[in-house]
Structures are given as structure tokens and as C-alpha cells.
Length: 217
Image 1 (cartoon, rainbow, N blue to C red):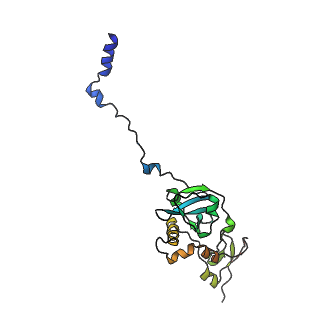
Image 2: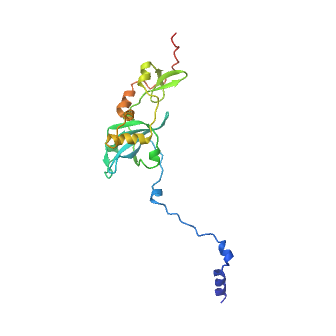
Image 3: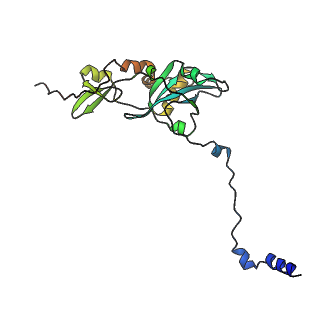
């Protein structure tokens, strides 16, 4: 019949034509690792887990973002928990603060610190250190928010730090050391809440125009 002839013609493709036919589409199946590479930028209030070992984790929170020169400003709470333990955000964030300081969100972005929720941070608990800064040929002390407080004295220069930031891994290593995993390094001291409190004062949070004092002759 006419239909069988046309069917045969349709099925018969010359070799030179077959060679030009496009290859069948390939479907790429995501591997487990690719499925778990979802990337998230840190947001104020994000509560995240920090691994300690195979069975324990701790938690931290993003309390500020892009504040002055700080990419993110975080706290790490002192307690550790079993990885499978269910715990509320309120319980996590009401714990004592162990570590605090400026950092980056690389480990959050790459999923190494897992975001478990978001809660408005209680900033009244966060120390606000002062810093020394060199401007226009003079050293000054400025508050946490970048307001200039006074020209720095020799004692100020010994007591206060320049603005600083530490890597997320630095915070993680310090936290692990607090819980007996790894060695506590002396440089971890500046991440502690105790150190932050020692750098904070009750100086007024009001910008002041302070000119460089003339050098004594």
C-alpha cells in the first residue's frame, strides 16, 4: 500500500544523512555533592551551625552586616549540642556568648556553616569596642560605629587595636579549641567576649570634629 511504501522511505535514511544527524540529548543527573552546593549570602539575624567533631555542633549568629569596615559581625555561643538534638532558636541565642568579632561569610556561602533559622539579634548583648585609626597624620580613637572620639594618647595606642577581621576558619578553630578539639592559640584571645569588653567603653556615640593638636616644641 501507499502507506507502507512511505513508511519504508521514512525509515530508510542514507548513511551520509545519518552521519549528519545530531547526537541524542544527554540528561545530566546531579550528584549528591552538586545538590548540596546551594549558596546563601549571610543576612542579619541568621543563626548558623558550626561543626566541632563528628557528633557535636555549636551555633553562631550574624548580628551586623556591612557595618563600617566589617563584612559581617558575628557572635558564637558557648554551648555545644549533639548533631541530632532539636533546639529552638530562642534557646540557642539566649546562651552565653563565647566569641565575637568581624569576619566574612565564606563558610556560610559554601554551606560549611549551615543556616538553621533567622532571629532578630539582641544587640544590647554585643560589646562595641573602640579602635585606633590614623587620619591626616594623627592617631585618633573612634568608636565602634566609626565616630571619632579623641586624639589618641600613648596609653590609647598601647590599649586599642586597629579595626580587624578574622577568617571564619579562625573562629571555627577557636570554638573547637574551647571544646577540646585542637589547641587554643594565644591569638584566639582577641575573639573572646572578655577581650571585646576590655576594648569597649561608655564613650558617647556622637561624632565629634576633632582637629590634630599641634606637636609640642
